[in-house]
Image 1 (cartoon, rainbow, N blue to C red):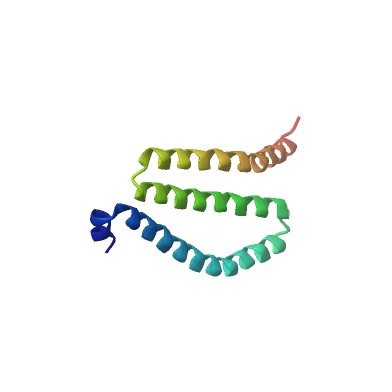
Image 2: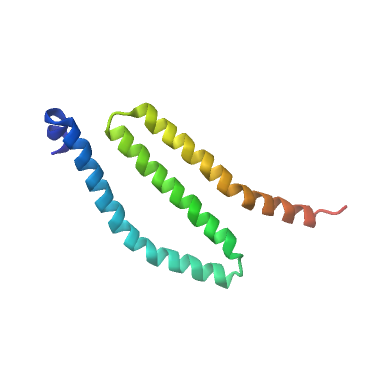
Length: 114
């Protein structure tokens, strides 16, 4: 259906693709709640700082939203914009991961003698 619509009315095909993607994304967000509660329980059992769990959730969110936005741009035929969205997502993920990397390095430094 999208292929036929894309040939006849490309703008409507993009809109339909976005709507379809949002419906799927919304449906899956409901399913993510159970996964998040299990991850939170495991974090508490392992006595891991909640800061790290929250940061990992943010990183996952940026990754999924970046991929989602990139796919929409590609569906619209904007491949250059899609690449820039992917690059921006990677930079944001690197910035978010930096405190975790620093904490790991500090822990390693404490373990090393001298």
